Length: 357
Image (cartoon, rainbow, N blue to C red):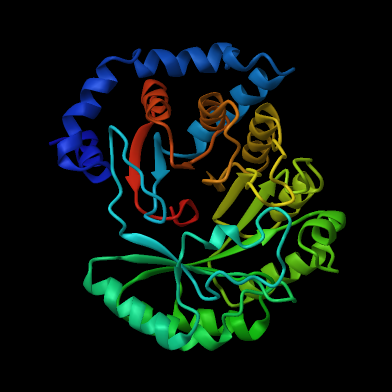
């Protein structure tokens, strides 16, 4: 058994191995495709000025800096049933505020909490965790709505989070604008990853999040978490201010100065019934451009693109994100996995948040 077959067995259930091999045989020779991209660039993306050349540089840098495999994240908070892999609910999302969120941000208004398992007290969270572990769940994203200070109110739950870690869960936590007490508690609990949304524009913070804070508040929270040697994974939402790019590139530039292992990009996807319900989100070519520039700015940073992104040109966008040099993509189309295979990238499927891979 060679290392290639070993990787495929780790990446996919046994029942899917033969289908993956057959799919690969239907693609063009990966080595030929790789050489073509190095020489010619990504001509499919010439619709945007200089995008093909930008992608050529990002793709070549990604291949120089990382092994030729790509992670596809399909956590169990949303059902995924593709031709290569089906998730089984082994990694789930838990909201410690139930459906409640004090901020009622314009892009969400708490609706993103609806599909999560509510655990609004430490006692409920402990009972829930014990039950889920017995049922074979291996990981949890612990999140929730924010209070009026922009914080996920984690402090009453820190002891229970430590208990959940003792059950051998993988634990990822959203913090919001964390303070030192929260950071110390998360470190003592030995959580695996800390997710922190980063915003680089004061007007966006005020208009969308309804907070009277500046971008440096998010930088301060990042530094507080890093000071406790936590593995922090910043998240940047492209187009957060009603689909407009306002400060995202600045905050990405700032983040390049910090000792990070992973950065997650997502893009605004409108939620019906919210003030942004009719917003189309940023242009897919703009999303690909910023992603490629992020790769060029951060050669060794693991770059993930999360589940939030516009429905417009979905297949084209996912191909562009791969060309832009990402390491991980959440909830891919089947044809996107085919595309990755055709360009010499081995798929590794995982039931975990993209920021944890």
